[in-house]
Length: 236
Image 1 (tube, rainbow, N blue to C red):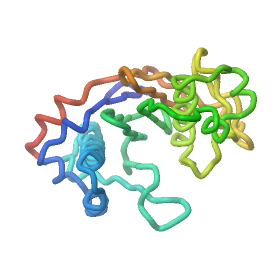
Image 2 (cartoon, one colour):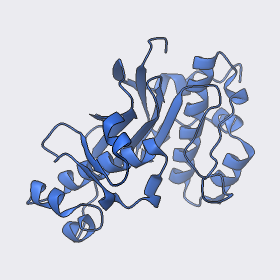
Image 3 (cartoon, rainbow, N blue to C red):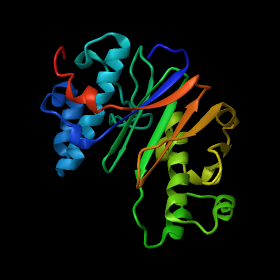
């Protein structure tokens, strides 16, 4: 990544997991992996953490295993906050189902979210917990794809700011699913509305993805990380 202001999104699959990926995990990440019961959850967590270090290491010119990733939480001592790479680019990670997204940004703080669209018995009931009345009206009648478009856009904003789900989604408003992504409102945070640039991603059929950058990227590109994950076992 050499272009000033560039933002790159890398897509991976839990099936890309290799045995040597575990060698890249920190002690805390290994503990987190062991706490997960389902093999697919362990694979998602491992591939995401390994890919982040591979990409950051390539950018910094360091061995991936030497890349320090901090996940400090602003409200507690548990290391589960937004990942940061000291001295490196802004980063963000998301995974759902068979899709894993890792983003490196040279344009400013970044947030990515990918969600596997799952049928909901009462999607309107769930939406009322996350959407404002204006958003519900703009998307009526709200279908599954529309709901997940709203959700990924909002979560990408909250990940870019570092707030996560500690801030209620109803405190922000984004554009309707049929419209280009844009942040319209963030209660008490007009500077975020001014800075945010939002993008729709292409994670594949059955998924929705969104990206928010608190800055103006010169380019946003999407890449397949499978080759990198399969053939970078040397020089850890």
